[in-house]
Image (cartoon, rainbow, N blue to C red):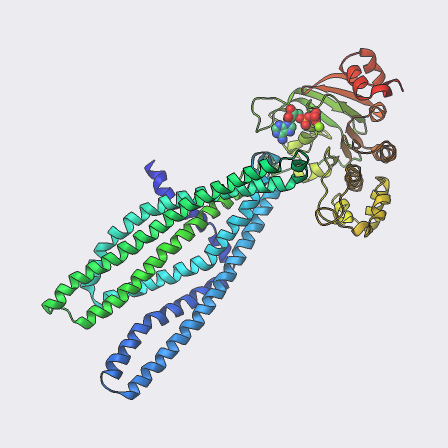
Length: 591
Ligand code: ADP
Ligand code: MG
């Protein structure tokens, strides 16, 4: 316990990890440090110049000396002003740069994390780290670090001058320091705990808001406004409560710091005053010493105030570094095997067992085995929750299986690079995702560097060209929050166009036409039929027409293939397929 306690009291490691980011901008760091030094020297020279002005100028009625020292004072103040401005500039720019780089890296990390992570961590929480925590670090790396440095240099400089002025009294002050520092370290630890807690509560409330904003329509349709307002109000209230605790702790810390520091100065003064009355110390030396020790104390006091900010930023850096340190569950092998360069690839599930990592106890697939030949079209049917979509997730290697093997074109999929693997499959998901970009850009996601002609061709095949042309800006129309809203069927057709554009050897269709009306479905189905030619297609089907066209039908139940064959043979079996078919396809069954 003791060790981890010590470690947690110096929670600066997360900030230390920011150092490489800062070192990318050595010029700015050097400029900031140089300005800092100049400003500190200028500040520390002020008492000396003042003393010269008084002792050599005013006391001796020497006008030339008055002019001389006044001149130097002006010069010192000018340097102080310029150096402060340039310190401020370089330090703030540095903060902006560091945080932008950090955010870029964290985001890049997010893009390689496995779905398991996104199942586990709420997106609002992640966004809060990328925004609130990043801002916290920005202000720490920028303003606070510069203030801390200034105060530190001021403290050191003043301390050196104290020693020069009176070594004996400095020794006394030195003796007082542990009494100041030790309680403050303890208090600081307590304050940091409160701050981390407050930051977490704030992230909770942002996470909640993000979710609610994304689902406002659903919330309104269920008239849940009042309840949601209640929830959000509560979480805001909790965040406020935590923030108040944290601020209270910091205020207390500041009060303690001030009191301890100035009380010790007063103590030293009282002690030194004995020497002055005894005649062993000059009043001039004492006052000079007091000026410097006040400077040192101000530096130290400033440090303790900035310390709060910096430790808060350290908490934020920790939260960002946690994201950077997330293990990537699914990774490419170092020496990947190539996939056969064929137009179609075979797919093999060999005794695959799988459960989702966040749902330990419930296996989704149990000893699932099937084989699909290159070029074959296979339909998977089964009750919802049977594990149909999960099969696609495993094929795409979003998750790794715990037992069994998954082969693609004869290669175990974990021996193929993730890029090759995913490039070999075009997926039309159950719930198509359309991004807030133009129609053309949305389709172009199917293939890097697709030309406008390719995009239009794909859209025509997916029977999306017509409705796209009806939009005010055609292929350049923006979709999403600030643009056109699409119907479910339109979204599906864009997703299909995307897959058509991808032109991959394996086609995965997850109820891809479920949101289409009968007429466009027939048309889109025709396009999909064209695409299936010469490829391996797995289609999770919900319509008889699709199922009947398949070379083979796998009937899935609770993660196992319970029946397989073609439509007629399965109907004749009068098993699950026959029941499902009559329920799902209704009268169609007779067709
Ligand atoms: P289907 O597509 O056949 O309707 P799924 O493959 O989507 O079924 O889901 C199979 C089971 O796995 C369901 O019980 C579902 O609750 C569960 N499941 C699906 N996705 C996840 C996930 N990301 N995390 C945990 N459980 C999941
Ligand atoms: Mg599904």
